[in-house]
View 1 (cartoon, rainbow, N blue to C red):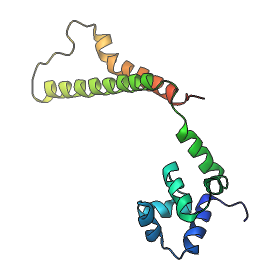
View 2 (view 1 turned 90 degrees about the vertical axis):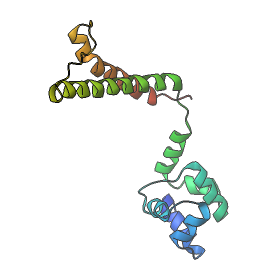
View 3 (view 1 turned 180 degrees about the horizontal axis):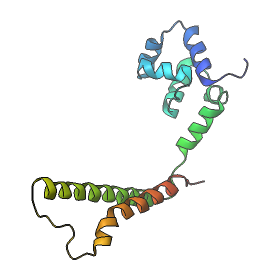
View 4 (view 1 turned 135 degrees about the vertical axis):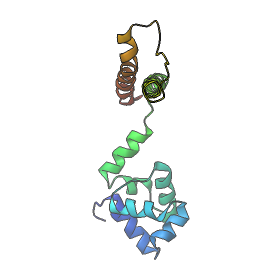
Length: 154
């Protein structure tokens, strides 16, 4: 059989058996839309689903994967583990803390302006630090998280 992409192979195997997209979806417990997206190349299934398809069609995983470079790369990338998962969680948390503080600051400013309250923001801390702390946390958290998401255990 010629080298074909995953979606073409999936459709051929499904149609060989006389199944509709809905029939296949029910057999592997996914939506019909998922099957449609796989067949049109708009999306790819997880490795668990690829294993189920391999079993269902009685063909090797190798036959399903090797025909499509993009799918092969996705499976390889999905299988890699982050090199520093705890640091990734830390930087994600720092980013979210920055977002929380920024939203809190906006709410307090809005209350002070529209409800005539007099809530003080981080009294005793220099104004420059109080003003830029949320932004600094968001930048540090975002950059740190982004750098770590690219590092995987080899």
